Image (cartoon, rainbow, N blue to C red; front, top):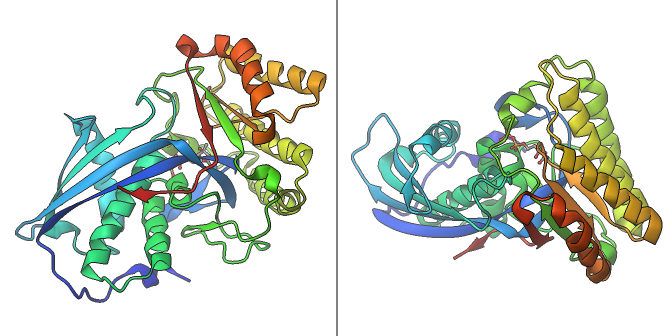
Length: 359
Ligand code: DP6
């Protein structure tokens, strides 16, 4: 399996104009991707739950134009033109042009909207880049109608990865692995795959209540964050830890050992933050309320024995994860005890989901 397989040789149809719309979800990593090599190749394997509620809806309209040496596109968020989104799209188009050689033949209008507020501290790059990759694949499929769904999704994931690494885990559900791992058949550095082994029913419909502790712009962009792993004193141990955690998870996902699952997930979240605290320059991305929430979760777990747990992305918000079976009691606890630590009391009830959908 290599990049060459995604370079099209010929298209059977020519298309003048059209419009495709896709909705694509965010995802939450259990084992984290933090550190990458050239060309968006991850330093370690990662696994995530695809989400259901936090999504980006993107429409891509395209009209044929005279071939030119530059890309032509306008980007809108919530009907407002966003000049500041253009550099990221430009980089994305440059990276994927060889795999979608028609890009310079069209003028594109990208209209996008999120189900979650833009400034919620929830990363929109995974859902945004995966939605755009799906729209682009719809154009390619129209040009090559014989394309299989498997190829469509795999190439969409491959393209999304070149927009934002974690976006390659947002095409399908419900558990996605990205990054070559010796114990996971079919795993690849180039795209996400559906987790191929048995998953215990306790993980079906797993709940994720996202507590918005800090809705500001990210303090450290993920690009800067990944860069911090170059020359980091603990980098190699961290990549090994992540790959070891992936190996441990295989048994845990199969036998439904939620305590072991929680230990891996929380350790991953804290290790990710530990990497940022120990890099040069160093950052503390948690806020006082992040810590308050974590301590309350631990206390509640100790007192009730309920399998409530947390994970974090590269920011202050807390994802509270728990089996659907305990939803009533845990949501009550969240509302009574944790929501007070959220900015303006904001939180989002999400759960494991099944991937992108064409609208
Ligand atoms: C902390 O996918 O946002 O969410 O590839 O530079 O776009 P780029 O990074 P990005 O990094 C996400 C990092 C993370 C962990 C994870 O989702 O695995």
